[in-house]
Length: 333
Image 1 (cartoon, rainbow, N blue to C red):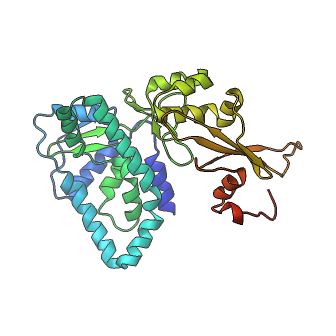
Image 2 (cartoon, rainbow, N blue to C red; image 1 turned 30 degrees about the horizontal axis):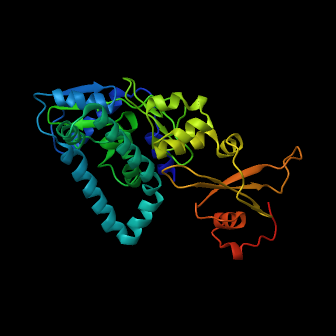
Image 3 (tube, rainbow, N blue to C red; image 1 turned 135 degrees about the vertical axis):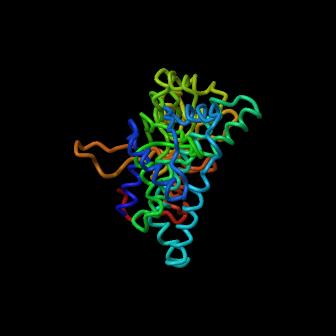
């Protein structure tokens, strides 16, 4: 677990890179691969700027990503797999890299998409950018794999040193291009990019990703969230953006201010339905906590349930993974 926690911190690290440590890590990785150390380091303020820098290289030599990253990675995995066996390797991965994989891999893919969106524009340009991105070593965003190998050998020490010190990097025979880490990283409790008042991820040069609870949104979209009205929400044609609006505005507030009427009520709660053009209905169950707060009041909760729900009891039962006829709580809390 110590390795998982330390590598989780690496993956989420923001702020200026430790350039000296990163360059030393690159040299170590080259030596470990049997390569001559690079002659030049080029620093960029973001992965986007790094791709632009790579595109302008004229005498960098071929990419040596396979030698410094892919081959030693595969060899270490094979060594551990042979030593631990299939069950042992699976247990190791489950306890280490799997804990970080979804957030790191997902974030890396979002960054790739953002770079392509900024530097592409047509199929040929998009293809050129994607090819350059294939040459990248992901630095801090390789944390999942590095967590699995940490403490079990020193062949990947160079890669680990770069990851702890910088962002993505592009290794060529004579030149290495290295990106700074993000300045800002905002995520929700599930690890998804999430921010309602600015970029959820941003780099020193302004390259940024905007998202609300993991969903990409246009920058201008966030500016109008503070002034939302039920009418504005209803008229939004993009169903995904409309869902974001509803989450930000609050389902309970929307129901109250839009004059919605409940469709069913029973002893478990009240069922509400929001019909949305071009999208499935939003169905919520309003329930009241039977345990009073310290001030004697009872907190109200809103539970999102499937659009096929027809009764409040059915909705509450669904949240417990039960059918309505088998939902019979002994005590409500």
